[in-house]
Image 1 (cartoon, rainbow, N blue to C red):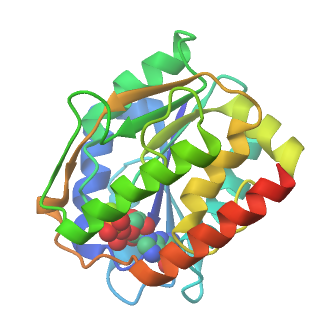
Image 2: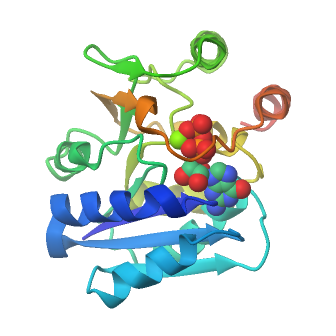
Length: 242
Ligand SMILES: Nc1nc2c(ncn2[C@@H]2O[C@H](COP(=O)(O)OP(=O)(O)O)[C@@H](O)[C@H]2O)c(=O)[nH]1
Ligand SMILES: [Mg+2]
């Protein structure tokens, strides 16, 4: 079974397209978990509408906005307990910039034993970013250099893209090791999750991601300066506890 986790905060305009793309790609072999994090737009209504039409969507909701990391924790808390060892969890943005067409190749790498963790990577050969503001490109390139320097994880080029697939067993071992895979509340949570799993020495593979930022209809929720600050603090803490 493939579980797909979509953290969504005010993604009403994009979420329907994303769910339809996933369902078209995977059909009945998936369960889609939407974490609506206190959205004030149609996000919840869109998820419910797709479920009523028969798409395998489960809606998890926070009463108020609690941040991307808390959405990941809520999602992990719901999904991991129902995952079999070789089930796969795929996480992607709900803003229609992460093409669902990559999911089958990511899942195949895990099912065929080639990987425990697969990253849709902007920095793998063939990867590309379209429409990403210059400043954001500098940031992700800078993050890549810093992470590689401090914590090089074999197989990883893209440490900050959240579009990934995880083997159920890896997630379960990670939770046994750490209690929580995610403690950060904001966007630093995604890198934290990867670093925490890295101590288990997973087999990591990347597939090239063409990040379609030019398709983004909803505003970015990333607070750039706070993300940089929190990421640096997370890295300092991780050095001490790993
Ligand atoms: N649940 C939840 N999801 C969020 C929050 N902030 C952002 N997201 C989601 O996380 C994903 C990444 O945010 P996005 O705006 O696409 O960031 P960007 O693509 O890096 O500019 C999207 O699916 C957002 O809806 C939040 O506070 N809570
Ligand atoms: Mg996005």
